Image 1 (cartoon, helix red, strand yellow):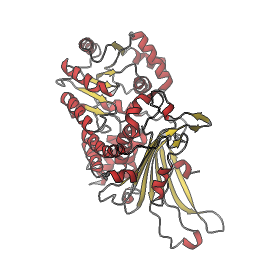
Image 2 (tube, one colour; image 1 turned 90 degrees about the horizontal axis):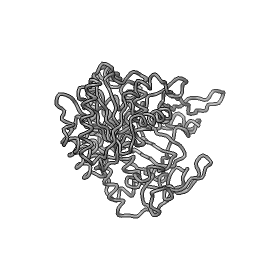
Image 3 (cartoon, helix red, strand yellow; image 1 turned 120 degrees about the vertical axis):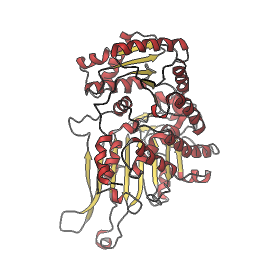
Image 4 (tube, helix red, strand yellow; image 1 turned 180 degrees about the horizontal axis):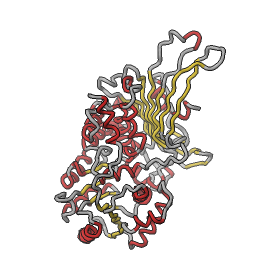
Length: 515
């Protein structure tokens, strides 16, 4: 491929396109839910602050609670004040406020859709949105196909003369068979090109930056392979427990909640081949190639290479916290995993022999998402006797809460003695005063408006992700775990450390490396 063409294209794919016609009505099913109040409405306000929302735009939230427009707008104001990255500006809020509406009905009842269709056509005339719609399904998974079928029955997703797009939150199915059934129902109405399977991790600033780091820097791309890289670790940890999500989490666990989507997306963007161009389908094609190349575990390999855990009581930030089985709506004998660590290989020419260690869990010591690339050690020939060996070079891509790049290399310590020490260069793009990085949902909502699905999962990505995860889930059914097996505030079960110790490696974390 032509590297110059690729680097020229990078700005195009990762920048907003203010010239696109974004006129539309956004319909949020689940308008009274936590996702809408904590993420979606604040994201729309932030876009309004940055003058990214189109002039011809309105929001209709659909819920089952009894509210009027005034009451609902008041609640949205409180949510924006609590969760938006920009402070409330009454003039800016007023511009958005007057375009927010609330409709009450049960998602399963036809009468509500009839009223909604009539109301949306009225708003089309008022806001000149031309029939363009975004249907955002911020609801429990069991309503996905119900809502799509009702929209189809009432002629609200024809995609003739205007466009209608649907946004689906995770989980997209519970396993591969259920995901296939759901996909058939949704794409039969909206088609693949108008179906947006959202993974908010893909909207994070530094995750989008991974390809730029690789393909726009001669320093990295030539050594981004098994000749120079010893191993790659991908970490996403949370300090919080299941909390209010415990009812959902009991059905999902860390495997389905994190590994099937977020963690495998981190893996694919880290390891893809340079695409022919940075258009949507070229990037997605390369991601699918990685997922198809993932090592498929036999049941024996699952128990050898995958560790699961569940947190018990412990201490975080000097505060005692309860175990998972003591959370509301959790069975006292629950076998749901809140932690998973695994070792996997990608069976292709670039990555053959390089182990990938992936770890995610709740009630960990820190909140952090990062990708650690550990390069191979140099032969201890020149420095073995006098210097006692060398630390490996490390590159860390920090995704949250800090956004940046950390590079460790070796240098001589100042002084008269010949001592080599690891030194670090640490760039944090959201640590500087005045920096206010966009939230993930801002970018993703804007992309839906302009019809750019680059940062959304295509069906075959979902399909191959489930194929990989289903092998693990099937093996787990054959053996009951000994839960709980790690204390809240720890780094997970002892078996997770042993997983790397067998390879003479250890888990790394940028905070520990730079300490």
